[in-house]
Picture 1 (cartoon, rainbow, N blue to C red):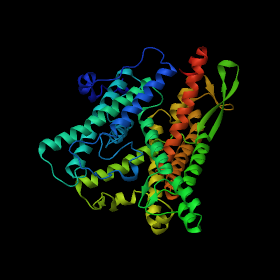
Picture 2 (cartoon, rainbow, N blue to C red):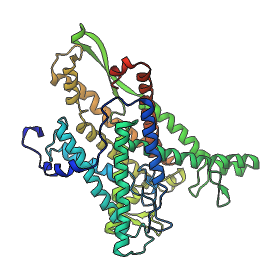
Picture 3 (cartoon, helix red, strand yellow):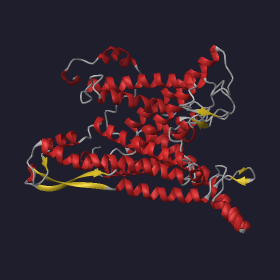
Picture 4 (cartoon, rainbow, N blue to C red):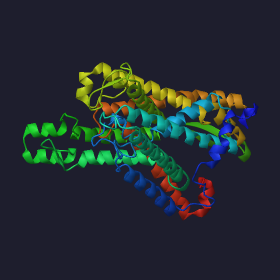
Length: 464
């Protein structure tokens, strides 16, 4: 326990952690139907809470997270105002502390793992309280109006309750459903935003809000000007160019997700039988994009809490107009990119660099580094043909593949998300990339679960 260098100081929190309510792990196999029910229930609760307005808040609250709102499963002015931001932020902090050996926990030990998880919950609530206080005290949720102590505290309490509910819904889905609650909430938010922007039948400023209804309206009008406006219209209204961009990004993301490098292996326990170890091109998945988005969002929170102009300045509607956070917001659409090329370049470089950094960091902290994989392969009786069965040699060979793939995968996912924004894809580029990855992973998990239901004997082989 604790890397053999004494017990972690975090154990002073163990009595508190043990008293926290939790969703207990199932002691039996959860059927496909049950997983579907629990996952659906979690989504319904989340959607209901994202429609419940904050009592005491402004009727027209600022969209504080801007274009990152969908990615963070947030909805302005509701109980889901903070979305998954506190949970992901606490996760980043805890992983960094473990990776740097500052809290002396060994996640392979069940007791340390339980303490880590419980402490992360506590930290998520604390981060949520800090973010809620920053939003309420800055007047972002009250239309600039300063409230009394009682109403201010009640507003903050509502937001903290929202964070707690998301925490337990995520835990519920992770243990009894498909994937994780955070993934489902992101997928649900992005899917709803894409569908609404594509098919919204209502009128906005004399034009149909949805890209597809507006396109058919232009076809019926039959003039070249109408058709041109159907494919490109400003004022942040969705158009057919955005629909086409979304479809293109969808297929590119699917292709990139399926790219992989295969390392030949031999099994010493089975007479030298050959096999392959696949290394996905997106080795760290889309985690780097989520973490980068949360970091960018926290810059906005700091800017609002401190009123430091170099961090960010905002207009009356809460939109960034200057400072660092302004440049960490992507231009949306080709026209904005052409109008502000430096802004677009800064955002692209920042997102790619952050994604590469978080990809490498995530791999180091989640037992996916070359040394960890080498130990796993050796313990399984595998070796690389033509090389001695030595962990150091295997680690050296694996690092030639894993490190470049990790960094290139992080850069690619960042560039793909930024490119989708630059092309004006529906919702946000980051949201589209995340939704595609999450949907594809859920599809594979559901297919595997269905197979294990049909053939129970294959359940152990599939890890069910």
